Length: 250
Image (cartoon, rainbow, N blue to C red; front, side, top):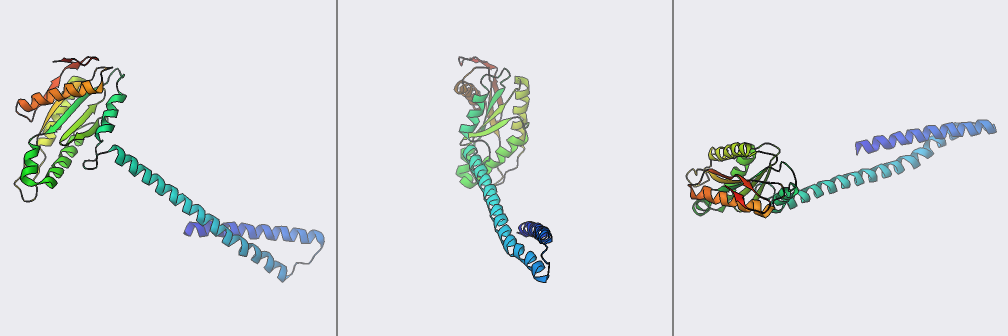
């Protein structure tokens, strides 16, 4: 409001000055006298008219500006909610899969990792669903902290997460997957009313060949995740490649 008043006073001062100049010029050209009444009226008329009018206009402009900012903020919040998981803040399943689709014809498409929390049902059953939710938040934080900024991360559903490492080689992806596994393993988790619970994840990875369908890449990574679970959990298993037709190379 202070800036509105200052701007209104500025416009009023300009109006008073212009009124004096114009009035004196006309009266001087016409040979009319300039007395106290003239001076007072030349000052009061623009003040009475210009100041409240400027105040109204600037106030309305400020209100419109604030409404526009609030609308932009609300739009940003709604956009974020539509594309992100409410519990973890990661991309939701639809948005994450769309990220994979966008890379379909990239020459260096990268590697997909599917990360699944080990023994998650045991946490829910023993410590409750609130503890389970907190475990998922801790795991998602550990995942993002272990990844470069260029990686896209999403929650695929339940206790399953997806990581798209754009442009990464298999060797780079293996290293990053191991970093994620170790970051989760190092995460302390002691839910209220329960003994400390060790957290761990199993990870399946598939190299995304240019042109391969997203569903085929997901199936390849899922198979590797299943192998990681079958081999004892808390480990990383990779498929070395995937053809555009969807066949997996071990």
